[in-house]
Structure formats: structure tokens, C-alpha cells
Length: 303
Image (cartoon, rainbow, N blue to C red; front, side):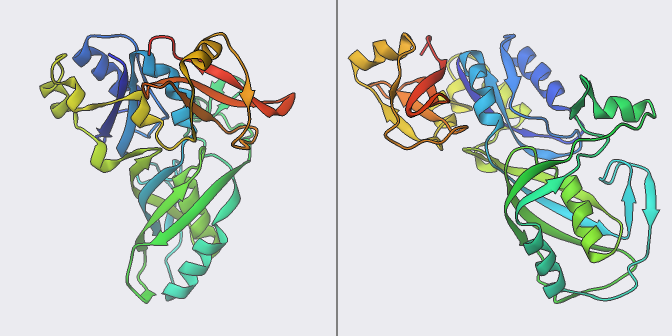
């Protein structure tokens, strides 16, 4: 039982709750998720099972796509619709489409973000939300994240009202907080804001169309039908550059052997290594001491 389940996470469950439920459904302990989704956020949550749990570091780093909604007019403690209101200001002017598009353009590329207090980011070994629940303020680390694209999903030319809401689609790199992005959009427009809705539509190679619900998983939980809902490790790594090795070279892989970096892979990037049977056998990355060669970071012996 090695593979990845693309779960359509329902609202109201933590990512850990989802792992716990899948362990019970599949009757196996070797299950892990590939990156936290907030309890009220829905959408794509890849769940790794068996040997595929070794893929978690590679799937967690993958690019992700979301559809969210921002509401201008008030901000909250959690930066989403479920926190207490901490700042409020009526939208006392008309906001134009062009103005919003300019703001989205400003926030495209590498940007700085300070994660919200109600988040799983760790400071001194403790998660920020644990400090927040205890009423303790701590200094939060500002970090650089990458926004590849933001698309306004609203046809209006002008936006007006005491509060204003509009939807957008964002394609981003790891570590991006869409809640914080909503707050940043509001700050540039001059109003307190929060994220009023969010769903994840893509995570790495997985889209919402690949996803199954808990009900569908329970219907297909036996060995004969599980392959209907479980994607292979190869499918999970489909977006990575691919290197196929011969039978002789496969032995070198399992012995930790190096190979020439013919793909000019850069530090921090990975190559998926396959055998002649098109099975994934390892993940390689450039050797930090010599970028002309690649070395294994993970070998999959059970494949």
C-alpha cells in the first residue's frame, strides 16, 4: 500500500484529523500529510501512505494554487473570517478595477511576509498559535515567499460599499500565507482586510479533479479497489525533472552513487530517478561540494 491520496479536505478538520481518519479507514499507521491546511480551508490535501511517506519533503515544497476571497472593511486576530475583529474602517470611497489590478501586480514575485500569530510556524520550538492562545506576543520571523501569479476573479469595473469583497486566484510557492496576502492587499488599498474564504485547487501535480472525499475513500478502501483513488508515487512526482537509469546504474543508485549533473540542476532543486521499468527509485540533488554531480537525498528500496 504505497501511494498518495489526493483528499478533498472538508471544512472543520485539521490536516492531522484527516491523517487520523485515513489511518482508521485504511487500517495502517504509515500515513502523513504534505503541508498543513487550516481547519476551515477546503481543497487539495495530498496524503502519503506507506513508502510514499518518504515523498513528503518533496511534495510539501511544491507550488500551490488557491481561490480566495478578500473582504475590505475590517481585520481579525486570525486574518480570516473566524477571528475576533481588531480593526474596522468603512470603505468610504470607490475602488476601481485598475487600482486592484495594480495592487495584485505589486504583490507578484518575491515578497516579504510575516506569518500570522495563529499559524503553525515555530518560534523557539513552539508553534505561534500556541503563544497566541496563551496571550503571549512573540517576535515573528519575516520571510520571503514567491507569488507567481494573482488573477482577479471579478468582472466589476468599480467596487463600492461599506465593506467590499472580491475573489482572486493565486499561484504561489511554499510557505505563502494567503490570509496574510489578503491583509497585505488591504493595507496597500488603505483599509483593514481579512481572508473571508479559501480553497486550495492545486498542490504540486495534484488538482481538485484528482481528489476524493472521505466517503469515496471508504467505498474503495479494500485492496482490490484502492487503486481507483490512490495515485502512484510516480504520478505524485510527475512535475519533477526525470532521469532514467539502466539496470547497472540502478545498482549504483542503491549504493548511493553519484551521477553527472547533465540537467544543470541547481542547489535546492531535485531530480526524480527512475529505473527501466518506469518505477521511481530515488530523488537526487546537486552535491553542494561539486555542482557538476548529483547525489541521492532519498532512495526508495521497496519500489
